[in-house]
Image (tube, rainbow, N blue to C red; front, top):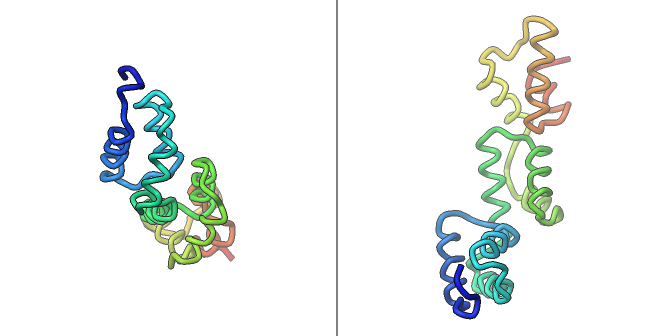
Length: 152
């Protein structure tokens, strides 16, 4: 970018609002994008604080949208939790928002298995193991996997 003295808080805020019109961003993601665009300008944290105060940026909204999108993709709680943790989001907030979500993780695991394999019942042990690994990779617990595959 050009000389940092020319960059104003209004310009930083304008770019941040442009980003936020597309989708929700966590505070950390927004700061990272603004730092990249405006070369770690000293006013970036103040601009983000103001966006939060004005209700234009919210980590709670971001986590809610993130969880909904991952559930729609068929990902389990463990995988979603790991991704949230890697993004630097407070896990206490994540746990609170997960409790508000009405997700039946057992049924979701069953739906994911059915979408992937059609027939849920595995013919042999090799096929069963493959299905179990797939659901485990997706972030489902052993109990959820057993429920999904009707393993007794």
